[in-house]
Structure formats: structure tokens, C-alpha cells
Image (cartoon, rainbow, N blue to C red; front, side, top):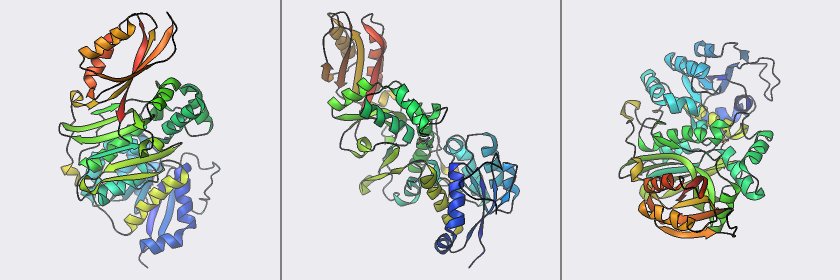
Amino acid sequence: MTRPLRVAIAGLGTVGGGVANVLLTRGAELAERAGRPLECIMVSARERTKKRAADVSSIAWADDVVSLAKSDADVVVELIGGEDGPARALVQSSLEAGKHVVTANKALLAYHGAQLAALAEERGVALRFEAAAAGGIPIVRALRESLIAYGIGAVRGILNGTCNFILTQMEASGRPFAEVLAEAQALGYAEADPTLDIGGGDTAHKLALLASLAFGIKPDLSNMTIQGIAHITPEDIAFAREFGCRIKLLGIARQTPHGIDQRVQPAMVKLGTPLADIEGAFNVVVADAGEAGPFFFEGRGAGEAPTASAVVADLVDIARGAVGPTFGRPARNLKSGNPAPANSRRSAFYLRFDVLDVPGVLAEIASRLAEGGVSIESMIQRGRAPGEPVAIVMVTHECSETGVAGALKVIVRSDKVLGDPCMIPMEAG
Ligand code: HSE
């Protein structure tokens, strides 16, 4: 058998521990598949003495995580996280030193992916990131290698398990967002600082990578609309049911005649479709692969085993000698931007207004929407409470997003309208 692939792991949290465990306990099978052994020669993490699931006592330890770039490893596995700091320093210096890199770091690649890919290609090494988007789901490989014959028209998905767990729990229990978020934190789904998850940033990082693979563009957060789920109420979720829908936080990257539309936002999707029916902390990705049709990928997008599984798959590929371009095309060919302008976006919309139940309020809302070219398809106003707040909920016909947004800006100034209206696009599942 040929020389072992020497692996160094930076970061021994849930995922790093999982990768170490797989390398230590499943070595024979991996060696058979890879054609050579995968040997973990060095590890590094913040605390050496921390109690861990993986027994790494037989593996050399480095106090300085960035020093792994100078080790004898052939490949450095970066599982530290964060778009800058030690993670970026380690990946940069490992590539410069001619080492392959495997990372689960979506933030790093969303910000610096194009530059790091160029560096990897210049040095003739691999920079692989299957674990960075949708955890264990092999969507990176699918977009990079498997679904390329007819081009990709769109990639849409639920890419954040924390948000999907929260929305699922809100629907099941009728409880408000803040209460369910606290439960998600107690269960360990949401981070102590859940901003990246619930604000849509984590989904955006992953979407930027998938869009790059799909459309040959540099990962690009600057042209992405990013909205989270904190404004979604149990009432919105209940009204969605009445329209035969669920509210899901979607990442959408779509080739349109006007350019590439990239956005992260809550959307209404019809029950009975793959995007609507995925529950709990699972992820799903729908890839429209031209004449080859849509493909659906569903599974665990986070956690020890799913994420370690994706990292190990990349390691085995590297052991076999796969050193293709990071984003599926040479980094120098990745294009910048080509974003679809906001005024080209069209969709039907769910709109909720909290209003005072007084004569004329509905007429006022309807005429402002009509002025913005927005036609109403259906409407619900439940209960009657003269002079008291009530919700008016509408679904529009397909119309321009900027038309609706402009009308809402006027409507919100009415003294009969309380708080900000809620505007959610309807999206095919
Ligand atoms: N926090 C993410 C999620 C997993 O909830 O899906 C890591 O990106």
C-alpha cells in the first residue's frame, strides 16, 4: 500500500472530535477505499486538558494551532471556525506551504473563498469544503461534479437547522419566537449567541458557496438580500396553514434573465413539497439541473457525525489524488457579481397588517397597494373588535417586490396601521 495521507486536525470540538474518532476507529475501511491509510499525525485545540469524546492522547499535540501549517501533515483539517483570526491564518499558511486543506468553515470561504481557491490552485493543492454547506448532505460534490451536464438554473434550500427547528416548534406549539429560541439554546441547537443562525447569516454563508459552485461566480455576500426569522409570529405561521403553506427560512440562488438573484429570507411554501415538509433540525436542498430536472437532497445539516462524515469524504478524495479546482472551475475564471436588480424580482406575497378595526382601514390599504400595481388574490380578517387591533392578512397575485415594498412604506405611515407590516414571498416548494 502507498504512503499514508498524513492528517492534522485543528479544532477538537464536536466535529473535530468526530473526525478524529472516525480516523482512529474506522481506519481499515477508509484505507481500503482510499487506496492508502489516513493517519492523524497531529491535533491542536484551545484547551489541551479538556475532556473529550475522542481519545487523542496517542496523537502529537500542537499548542499553536497555526503551527500545523509547518507540520509534516499532507492535509490540514480546519475546524476552528470564524471568517478571520486563527482559522484564516491557518488555511492561508497551510496552502502557502503546499498542504491540502479541508474545512467546514462557511464564513471563511464566503468572505475569502475566491482568494483562497486561487492560492490552492497556484500551489497545486486541494481546498475542499463539503462539510461547510448543509453538513452531511453531499451537495458540494453534487454541484461541483455530478449535476454539471445541463447547467444549474437554481439552488434553493433550508440550510440552517436551528431556524428550521425553531419554525417547526413554533408551528407545533403556537409559542412565540423568543420562547422557542430559548428552548433551542437549552437543547444545544442554537448557539449562546444565535445571531448568525436566526439573522440568516449562516444560511447566507452557505448559499454563497452553493451559488459559486452552481453559477461560476465568486462567493458574494455583498449582493445578497439577507433576512432572518425573528419577526415571524405564531399568527403568521397559523395564517400560513390557512393558505396551505408553511413558513421556511430559505436560501435561494437563481439564474434569471436579469442576472443572478441571491437571497436569504422567510418564504411561504406549499405543504406537500420538499421545502415545506422538512421538519426539525434537518436541511434540504433542491437543485434545478436544467434538462436533467430537479434533484432533492435531504438530511442532517449539522452535528458531529453528519459533519465529520463530510470531512472524511473530502479526506478520502484527497488521498485518492483528487485536486480539482475548489469551486469546480479555475478560480481565475470565477466571475464577479452579475446580480439581478431588486426591481426585477417578482412573486406573489403574503402580507400581514396589524390595524385598528375602524371604518376605511381596509380601503386605505387596498388603494395604496393598487397604486403600487399590487393586486390582491385573497384576504382574511378574522373576528371583529371595533376600535381594537386586528390582523388583516392578504395574499397578492404575482407582482413586483419593489412595488409591494413601496406601498408598504406608505401604508405604515397611516395612524390606523400598528407596527411594521409583515411581507413574505410565496415560493414554489
Ligand atoms: N448552526 C448551523 C445550523 C450549523 O443550525 O444549521 C452550522 O452551520
